Length: 118
Image 1 (cartoon, helix red, strand yellow):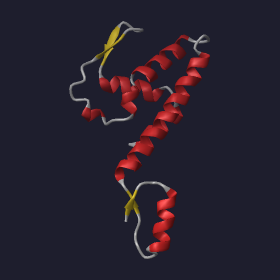
Image 2 (tube, helix red, strand yellow):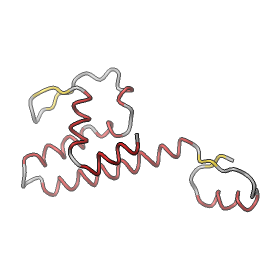
Image 3 (spheres, helix red, strand yellow):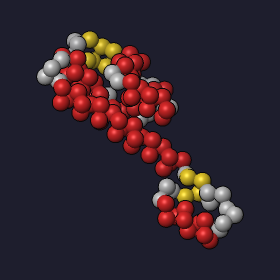
Image 4 (cartoon, helix red, strand yellow):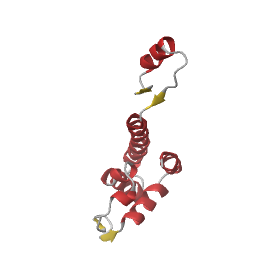
């Protein structure tokens, strides 16, 4: 049986069909992974928002985590038409790999979660 991640479905299937194999559909697995990744990104971003008056980098970290949130949700290969992005705060252009590397270097927990998700 393929189900979404609602616990009640699992309990009913285990009682009604005790010998059945239960699998979670891939849509819900990916959706949960993306929600968890987004939660870590937002928590990291908000930590820097609170501290942004202390260090210039904190303002840049907040800006980049907010502006390029999509990098945590999709495979970079799907960004085929991505042209180097203008980073106004630095007055320069960065390609998608440079942006991802910058984002992942902001915080070890964020990097760890991203690698687990991928």
